[in-house]
Length: 638
Image (cartoon, rainbow, N blue to C red; front, side):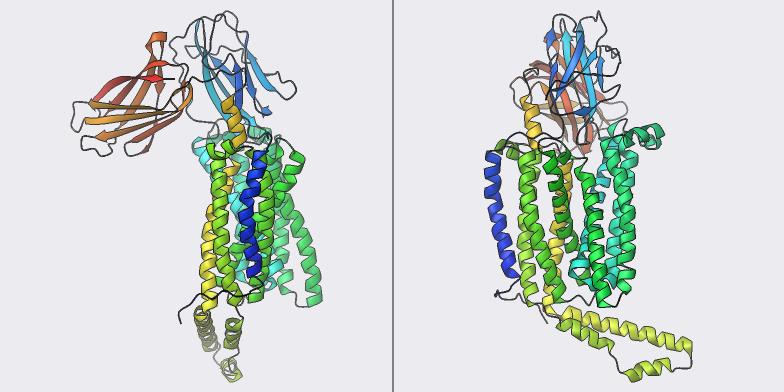
């Protein structure tokens, strides 16, 4: 039988989903009104100024270098380093002094006396109050700019292989939380019979395992993630102790302790609770598990709220409980969706009543998500320009779009729900009620081995009949397909949500770009595009180098290099190096070593241009062990 989409009708489930669609339409209007009048919010610290300023030329050597930040940070002995043109330390290597006053966050390091003229590099690294590592570098000159052997770091704090593994653990932690909390809530609220279903038990247990393993990995990698970037430092006891003294470390340890309580909850849910047959006792146990599980779930969600964006900035005492509600709503909706998908595909006996109960839970979760999401957006974005012009804002727009798609797909799912009946379940149960004579003949067989074999065959035949009946039900098949589509969108939505938690909020990014009076305003400029032919003289040694520098002004720039062969196709070379020289000011060469992204494509981020001028860009291309050439071209930057 082919499945046909049911005609719309007055379903009690469809009406709430229509309301959800209306709510989604209203979200953008309310969202815009809030953004229009939003005030500043602080999270994810950024450098807002320095003295001397980036690219400044001072007549006499300053006694100290100070850096200003948008919010409180944690610093260590080497958080701020000042290097002379030869790469030696020009600061006294003492712990940075806290020079903060009022709402201004400022740290400084003292310099040696009698520093000679030349270009000095300031490299800094710290931990933002919302637990994220931040870093950067800039230059200033005493007397006049000079050549420098210091290569500005191209890798940001929290990057490299350690950063990749740490980020994977972050994604796994959110995914495990959603499955653990959402799966447990689905069993207790929507389908109590699921406590005896092995697929449901596996889903929740795997969520617990994923969250526990990810939390352990994050705790061990926290020290190298915010510091050296080396895996070997994960087992440095001194570093681990320092992590435990921080807010993120305390949050991770608290999460591990709560996961111990969650393990006990799971054991009772799928053990004692699943075996309880007396309805009165089961009702009492349901209430106890709901209260205890809710407390544990709220505590685990609070470990994120107390250590990330919600814990910093304005109205933190409101933002943290709002963040907890947001996370619990995400888990109830997406985790319940995953549970429904598993139940529809792996268990034969979930009824229409359980599906309808989940529909009500999902609607309530959407309402909570809309309310809490609007508030969070107001705190973290703050303006229309930040919404459209920053990475955080763009990810937020993508998240809202994904939620709209998810609601649209969910609407179709609820249409199938309105037609879903328990006829298939009844037919499947009838399969189990085989004639007693057959079962009796099996049990009366004098050969135990043969009796066991016949029992296995009968169980396999019953399972086959159940699957055939289940697959023949058009309503159930249609619902499975639409829920599968919902789950696919939900996975992408969860990934985008996790990315948002590690992205600098739009308000802070705009504040850092705007700077403060103590920061130098970057010279106006535009993207630089260069095209340079080369010939190393060897076989297949001819090609073209294309270079893009954006935004093409003083300060930090992104550099991309493409190499095309003589046939116009991407060309891989063993080695590629660049250097920037401002000959009019005797600055450079400043080396740039880009990373290979793909065949014929290299990239380097955070390339520092200390001042505007006509820069000579030298490119060294090596096509074999002995064949290489250096070409150059001038470009106006700033």
